[in-house]
Length: 123
View 1 (cartoon, one colour):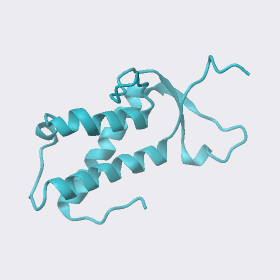
View 2 (cartoon, helix red, strand yellow):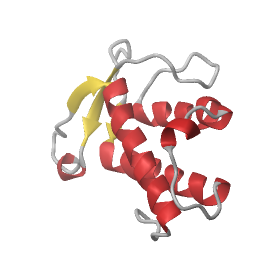
View 3 (cartoon, one colour):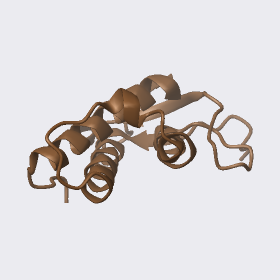
View 4 (spheres, one colour):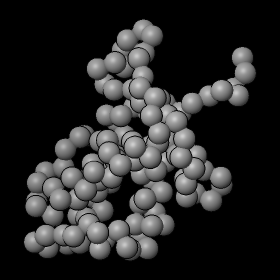
């Protein structure tokens, strides 16, 4: 069987949960006790650009070319939890960049929950 026409499969619920945890843990450890955060300023940080954003893009299925930056957008097959046990599994095909936007929102939700002192969810 040829692997020329492969497409990455992303389990949306797992990726979303991981992005949430990343945001929760990142702000829990880096921000300490603060009242509120502005994610636009946070996104200007070197850590966001060099570490966190590439991790979120990797979760979304971006292709990497060996630098660990995961910058090449491509189609991905997204499987949702309610479809994961179907045979065959139904998946939605979308651009990784659209999925990455959802994962960034999940990261933000986790960050805000951390700052607000909410318990981490998704274990």
